[in-house]
Image 1 (cartoon, rainbow, N blue to C red):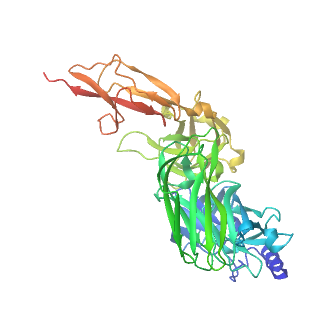
Image 2: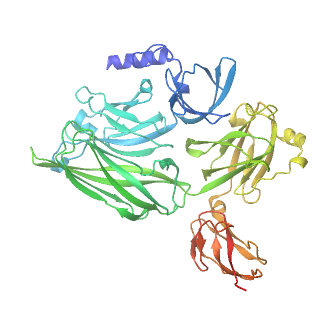
Image 3: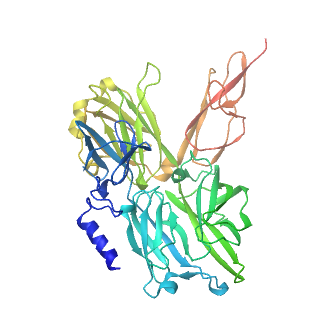
Length: 527
C-alpha cells in the first residue's frame, strides 16, 4: 500500500513529468485529456498524454495548449492558433456493485466485506486510452458499491482489485454521458466470471442519443466470460420493467456450454422504448445469469444490470447567416454538437439545422468568426423549431452591440436568451475573428412537446386547418375539406410535394413525432 500512496503523491507533485506508465515528461496535462472539437473545421481532436489523434487518425501535431475556460482550449502550433471546444472530457460518473461469487447455492452473492474484511476493498479504475489517469476507489463494505467520478464518456475503463490475490481480474466498463450511471454488477471470482454489455446493432445509431419515441430499435446484448476458466453450463435471461419497453422480436434467453475465457454470446432484441414524462430517464434492463460448476455440482446465480438513457423529445436548432458561420451547441449531459452553415446551390442564405435533446437546463451556443473566409463578420439568426429570420438589411448592428458583447471570454458570462413558442427566434452579429457565446433557455416540456401538422394544397386552392397535438400522440388524418383543383381529384397525403415521400390515406392514425407538412396528392381526371 505504501508504494501505491507514493505513486499517487508523485503524480500530484509532477503531473506533467510522470504519466504513471513509466513514461516521463508527458506533453499534455490531465486537464486537456479527452475529445475536443476544433471549432473552425469540426475536426475531432483526441488528446492523450503524449499524442493527438485527429478524426481517429494518428497525427504529428505538436501543439501548445492553454485552457481559457471550462469548455474551451486554445491550441497553438507555429504561427497558427485553433479554438477547441469540449466534446468528451472527464465529466461523467457512474455507480457499480462489486460482488464475490463463491459458488455456494445459499450465498451465491457476497459483497466485498465478505471477501476482504470489514473495511471493504480498494479498486483501481484505469482508462484504457489514458492509463496514467487511473484512480483508486473504495467499495462500500456493506453493499459493495463503488462510485467513480471524472471519467471520459465513451472511453472504456478497467476495474481491477488492488488486492494482490485478485489483481489479475479485470472488468471493462464503458460509461456514457451524464452522472450516476448504473453500470450494474461487477462479479469477482477466480473461476468463471461474466459481464453483460449492450450496444446498438446499427453502429450508426448513437446509444447515448436515443429518444423514448416508441420506434423499434435492435439492441445487441453481449455476455462475455471475463474469468480464467471455461464456463461449463451457463444460461442467461433478459427482463425489463413492462412500463419501460414494448417487446418486438428476438430471443430473451439462451443456454449454452463451455464458453472459453474471452468468449462471448449475443442476444439481439428489438425493443420500442415507451414515452417518458421527464427530461430524461435511465431505463434498466436486468440479466439473470446461472453458471453450473460440474466439479463441485454447485450453481452460481446472480443478476447483472445494463442501463440505457433516453431523452424525451428532440428540438431543432435552425441557423441562418449572410456568410458561412460555424459553432457549437453544448447540451445538458455534456455532449457537444458542431454546426456550419452552408448554402444549397448558388442562391439563398446559408443555413444549418442541428437536432438536440430537449433540456430544462441552459444550452451553451458558441459562434466562431475566425478562419472561414476573409472578412468573416456576418449577421446570423437562430430559430427553435422555427424558420430563422433573414432581415439582414434592417438589422441594427449598433443596437445589438449595445445590448450584447461582441465576444465573450467565458461562456458562464454569456447573455441568457429565452427562446420558446412565444419568441423562438433571435438575430445577432458576429465580428470577424471573435467568439460569441449565448446561454439558451427553451420553453417547458409541455410547450415543446406540442407539434404542428400542416396540410399543403400542393397546386389546389382552399385550405385544411393545421392540427396541433402532443409529441407521440396520434391524430386521424383529415380529408381534403374544401380543397379543389381543376381537372384533378384528391387522392391522399404525402410527405413530399412531388410524391416521392411516404403516402398516408385519409383517416390514417398518424403518430406525431415532430412538426411536419403533408402535401395533397392529386389524380388527373380523364377527359
